[in-house]
Length: 333
Image (cartoon, rainbow, N blue to C red; front, side):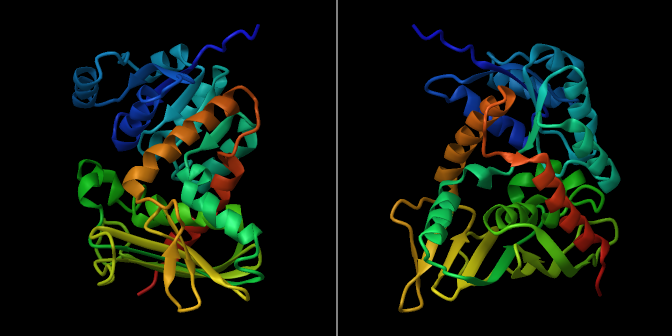
């Protein structure tokens, strides 16, 4: 007889948007692989909100209590606090699932990755995306052939986006925030995962408003030897954008054809008529995101148990951060 495995005790540090999404993923499981062991946020109002909205979630007094109660700690706090919480969890023998970026200082991020071993991963949901899985399958089947170029385009009506206003104090600050760290990093991870190592960067960012994050980026680099062009803008979403606040495309062209990921979730192939057609099972991000997060949660369980998983490794996250911070450090006019 097989003995059932107890659900993973997952602790959460940070009760913002990402922390609450993870809670909903855990609470919405059909067959519980994980349970919320403890949650803490430094803001009393956030703790009170969670206690009222999720009465079954143990809200604790501090981050140390989260670590003590958990097998794995999910760090969903602002970036400047990531490494402190992650190191505390690892020192106590726990595993860590961290939001990106790993740190606000590259040297600190490098040191952390060197010391952390295999007990950590980073939350890049493209690792568990159904749309990305469709892209990978098409590429493997030869739909692209030999890749010739990759184009990444991101656009925002404004930054931060309306649903991020509560976190604007850090999301629109040059030290921790900006769309390159928050959004472009996902597409850099996708490029690394599907094509190969990122190198050969030449890029710049534009910071027109003192004390605020970038409003434009341009970059050229390579992913697994494939030339990549990146363009990002705030204030000029294209007229044909499907989403008003946030539009993005990751488009891979090759000698045999072209595929792309549109608006976070929708895998599409270019037909003979030049038009893009979605995969048969494609769904908008509102429906796809919870599925990807549940698959991420399954990966967290496997990672904590020392089993193979598809989550973004600390090394992959660091490689992405190296590119991001180099772009942001190269200020253009």
